Structure formats: C-alpha cells, structure tokens
Amino acid sequence: IGAAIGSMGPCGRILIRGEDGWQIIPELQPLPTEIVVDKPGKGSFVGTSLDLILRTKGIQNIILTGVTTDVCVHTTMRNANDMGYECLMLEDCCAATDPLNHDAAVSMIKKQGGVFGSVSTSDKVISAIKETNGGSTE
Image 1: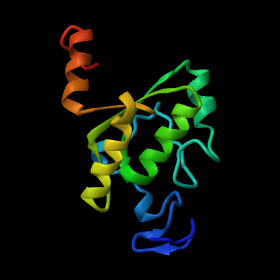
Image 2 (image 1 turned 180 degrees about the vertical axis):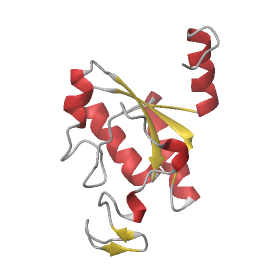
Image 3 (image 1 turned 135 degrees about the vertical axis):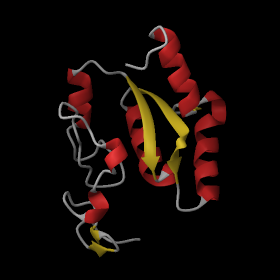
Image 4 (image 1 turned 90 degrees about the vertical axis):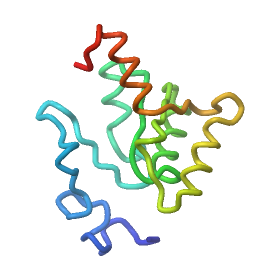
C-alpha cells in the first residue's frame, strides 16, 4: 500500500491491534497461553520483544509462515538468520500479492544451499512431527 503504520487502509488503521485488518482468523486463534507479538513494521524482530522471548525460552529454530512472502516473511527470516536462528519457511503456508513475487522469494531462500534458511511444506513438517512423536502432532 505504501502507507504509514496507523494510517487508514481498506481494513482500518494499518498494523494497529484491534483494527479489522489486524484480527487473527478464527482457525488460527492463539491459545490463552500463547504469546502474540505485534510487529510495527515489516519484520517481526525490530521494535518487538520477539528475540528476548525466544532466547528466554531457549528457542533456536523458527518455522515461518504468513504474508507477504516477499516482504514480511522474508524480512523476518533474514533478521532471524542474522541473529543466529535456524529458519524454515513453509512455502505452502505463505503468500504474496503476486504469485511471481512468492516464487522469487522462495527461490532466493534456496540459493547457495539455503543462504539464510530452508524451505519445506506443511505436509512434510507435520509428517516429521508425527514420526518424532509416535504418530501424534500434540
């Protein structure tokens, strides 16, 4: 959109908690114990406590999903990689405003043997979790 954070967009003020465009869809509502991090820009680390939260919990591996693949997801993944996190993007759980941008973003991640992370699909990750947990995703 090219608009500043807080300016009016088609779904209310952009990137502001409580506005229609901020809402998490019902299928993905966080559990009461899950942390929600409001990001004030394109990446999830700058201007947030995400790094502190992850390091406090001893988390070193991140699975990335979301929109837009070529901006917000990519920025978060690059920042995370620079900060020492191992990153995996699920390409079937991301999207961009233009499918060509999504494809280009996925291709960039795969360059040079995964220059700043890896790419997989949700089916493969779910299968690996089930295998590790004796058939359960719990």
